[in-house]
Image 1 (spheres, rainbow, N blue to C red):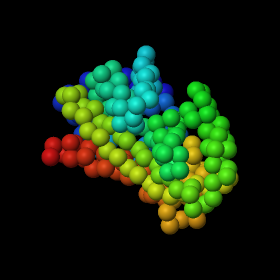
Image 2: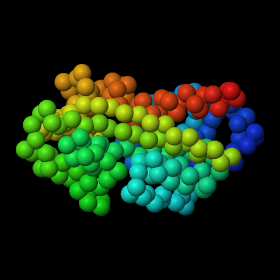
Image 3: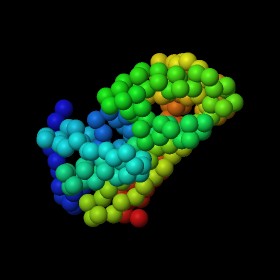
Image 4: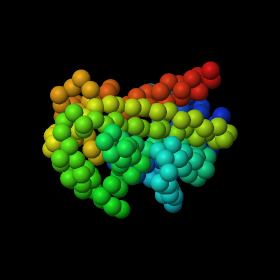
Length: 216
């Protein structure tokens, strides 16, 4: 589906909906973003739906920088408020790795399964008490007036010894949140979004967007 770029102006807001561009080409992520940010006053527009939309060039320095790059790329191209995000799995015994390299841990163009397989190989001799980790999501908001804001969300837990569950994506089949016996991939989408790093960051963003929409 193609959507046309709309100018960020009083005219474009007459239907009383806040238009927000989501700078991501990951369908799994876009689905979660849509579920968490769903509101009758908010309209989400994927950057990939705009003709000739650019692909943000990610860095390898930090999740914060990657999120800002994505949000700025979308904002500058569309002229609309835009968000970008980046997520990393930080494993304690690996000194926070794979971190910013989480999506390409097994190499460029690696699949979810490739990354999971490599992580399991690296941790194969590590006992349960030492398999602690956390997910971190950074969401960046870039507004047409140049203002920017970051929102962070965390989820702590541990990594199991083999993938479990068919829901979720990425490292979800390995990650068991604190207080749960199931992996994120075994939880219902609603419960996962309630507990997850991405859910926490996006709900903070949503509260901020509501204030902007209401002019507060």
